[in-house]
Length: 162
Image (cartoon, rainbow, N blue to C red; front, side, top):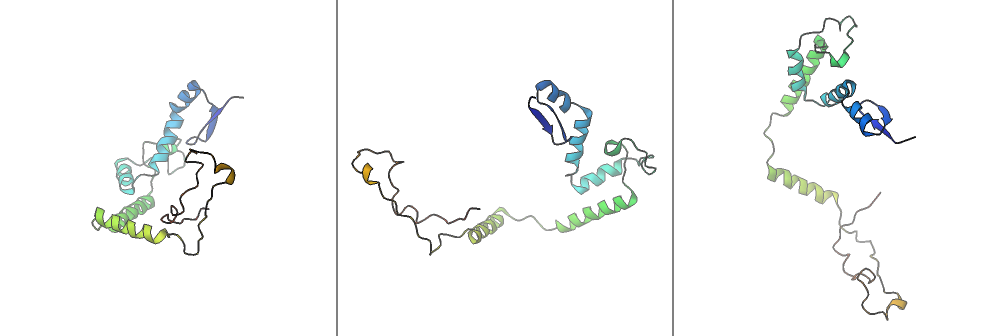
C-alpha cells in the first residue's frame, strides 16, 4: 500500500499521488470545508455584516435546508443575530483606547522578559573541563577537542529545560 495523504479540512485520507491530490483539492466539498474553517476565525463585525446582507433561508427554520453552512441564505435566528451584535459591541467597547506605542510595548516586553528569565543561580556549580592526558602531547588539536576556557560560562543565562 502506498503513502496516504490526510486532508485535515475534510478529515479524509486518500492515495498520495498528484492526480488524486489535485482532484481532491479542486473538489467542491474540500473547497467548502476549507472556506468554512477559515470563516470560523472571522471577525464578528465582518460576519455580522455578511449575514445582514443575506436574506433569511426559507427552508432552515423547518429543518429542511440541504445546503447547511454552504447555503447562500442566512441561517441565523434573531437570537443568533442578537448574540453576534453583543459580541461586536463588547469588542468595540474593549478596543476603545488608543493602541499602545511601539516604545511602550517594547519596554513592557523587556520588563517581562527580564522578570521571567533568571540569570545563573548562585548555588550552581559550573563544570571544570580538563584535557585528557593522552591528548596532551598531540600538537595542533582542532578547537572542538580542546576544553572551553573556564570563564566562558559565567555570563550565560540559566534556563531549565523540561
